[in-house]
Length: 133
Length: 133
Length: 133
Length: 133
Image (cartoon, rainbow over all chains, first blue to last red; front, top):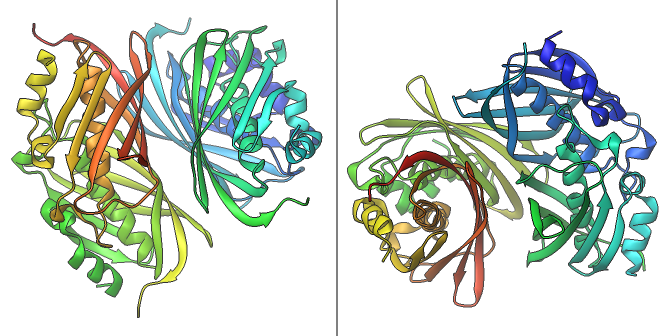
């Protein structure tokens, strides 16, 4: 496991609350999974949009920071394509679309089995500051 | 309190987990508040981006559904402007920028006292289906 | 050539002004190309962001309308990754990420040779109204 | 007139082609106007989305660069709310939502008289490089 991702995850209490499991990690790479629990629903009884967002946002943080430069989200957006229900297993898979000196662009697909349930885009600003070795 | 928002909030277990307090509600109107807790941090020890997103996303759902038509998020985006820390009190205030027959556009400001910590944009699709009276 | 795209392009005076060439078309498919001219620059002497946007936006319109249902842009966004200069040949290639009854989501890559110069996302609302046969 | 905006506009051949008139300028401020011409329509005979985008994108460039630091668009998005027709007079009015050391966030409203026809959001990256005095 990538050392930076390991450190981040150990401190990331909200990702732990979500029950996120790290399937893949590395520089520009992140594949995360979680199972939706009853306390994650919104006022319609379907999964709150912020839960799906959270999974993708953690994937963004892990993939972009794994390069060793502190990376902060500038803009993130999500499109919900299908309703997600309690018990569903969600997988977020990250594509590093572009990595420049200052900026990185990522597209993340959130799937439930074969179904694409959401697409997420994230732009990060890469600070000069490095993660400690 | 708006009946629809009351019903939504009663079912919205994730908003309850967040500790959201409804300061204002109504058709196209929503002002929500929450206090950030220790379990809401990310791998940097600052508040996970999805927490701020969640507050704004709930505000979007309450404001848009209060009109009486079921409204689903099509696209939501957030820009984080300042780091948010445990103990911070966040307030989300909704502006209904545009309300058409099929679509609504909302801009939400998330503040901590006088500080603007995030801006959020949400577009909803308004179904024909009405909330029960 | 798809009949709808043919009709659209014949009426689309701005795409004609841009000098757009249709390399591929079809249901959910669009690959367009153009060459940047001197009158398309911004105040920095590089290509105005709206030119790259325009190419991708036309690709969105052709790909989504080719299904035969009138499709209107709800939200479009672009990320400029590399500066584009006069004389550059730009190609926009469309991916139909999701096609539902009411909504379609598209991701478009704008390239110059091997270089990715911009990514574009478009969400369309699909009207009931059909294009005339 | 702000010297930087004056220089930018003098070089901005596409804004000139659009017929953009500068009503207000200054640090973080930009109010632009244009009249839609017949060659600006799309395949539906309504104004191409990129025209409205272009007006707002120029407003973003003028408002953000007027501070004296070179500012480049990272992410821009537009929501079209009402169709725009040939002959319409469009006005883009800029709000500087946030200005940090590295990043600026802007919201721009595009109106036709009293009607809001589009909303635009822009995030810029502020380079260290200054405009020449």
